[in-house]
Length: 279
Length: 276
Image 1 (spheres, rainbow over the protein chains, first blue to last red):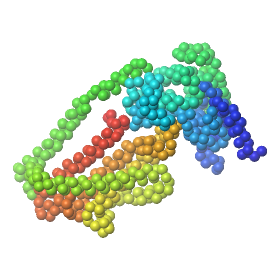
Image 2: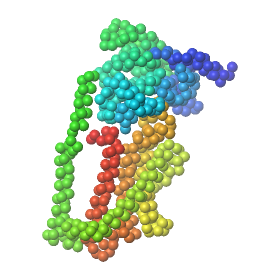
Image 3: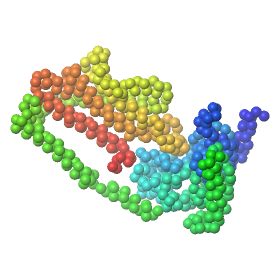
Image 4: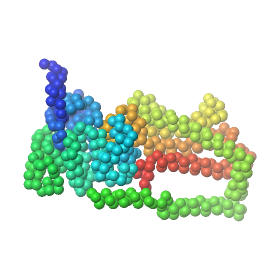
């Protein structure tokens, strides 16, 4: 069988399984001049199935390609090898079924909170009072009512990130991609945002792919965690988080939580040490 | 979180409730106005006391009286109107050309290859050197003056627009894409607003340049307009007339530059600079 036929076959198989969820099939990605062999292989033969409604964390040291994998799922980077298939078919470009929240918020600074949220709604063809009402609902959801007419530069980091989450959730994406969304926040705000995100996810039942390098954050939020190694980026372990669905303040003192965090921390540490030694 | 919200909400409200001019800003304005008043008084009395030859420096009151007389006869408005028309016409044409070319340079390698060397050479060049050529090609009336102004204003505008639209932060652009925006929508809805502060800076650099160019071309070509009238007054050894022209141009320049600053403040209410 030719490689082309094999690739087509693999894509077909992936498409069959992809009635729900996200299926990543043998994805390899390199930066720079690949042909001349000087490029950097960021991801190497990644295979991962994420179920519909799952909260999945991609965990690993910096430079392991976890953000690259997220951008590939988002359709922001071209897929060089392999395939990614979601409920809506193979990923070829960005789309509102896979909305994304970035670490540095990426709000439109010239728009107010409400205008930011309305932007995505207008792109979905929602107009007039319907759009206004939906925007209001999502601004309420992230506890920003009263700040509808504030510009991002008038808000704290935590408030900006909540506005960005409202903008993303408002288009009602099937999948929520989050690229270290709380990385730029202070520890207290971060904790509150984690709890709120988990609660929002619990109500909305969306599929979430959450990139982080924070072990506790991954364990607290996710149902499953992929631990990645760096250069070339690979998924080394996939771990089920066997904690109750409802998580809150006391989860952090849960014996199972502490045990799991320690166990995962050791696995991540191995990868980080290997990365610094350059293998 | 509740307390964080409450305090930040409070501070926003407080910001809205402050009067339009803050007390420390009021002190600033008073002192600055005071400096100008003192300088004017020094001019007036320096000339009156006879410390300076009144031909070399006529007193401010004489100059103001001349402006008043010219205003009564209407010539001030003709001169100022013509100078303003030439400046704005040249400036607006330069903006209409410079902004799209700057954007295209950032978006397309072909356009960049063509314009980059031209702009690298043209930017530092003293544009006024082209005046004899423009007079030869376009005669000595409005056309050549406006083309000269356009030529001078074009470079700062195109350079600032190119700088503003190239190497833009990809995150807002990716966000727009993920929210369902198409490529041509992203240009209007994301790239241009993101570049707006720099484009406005380019316009603010270009406008005084356009003003200078207008005055110089008027002086060199003669005819009506503030620059032409000043040269005419100079030829007749009418120093009051020359100073009248200087005072007129000070006011016109201030009004024009200030208008653009106000436009910037209005367009960039969202920018952190608006809250400094």
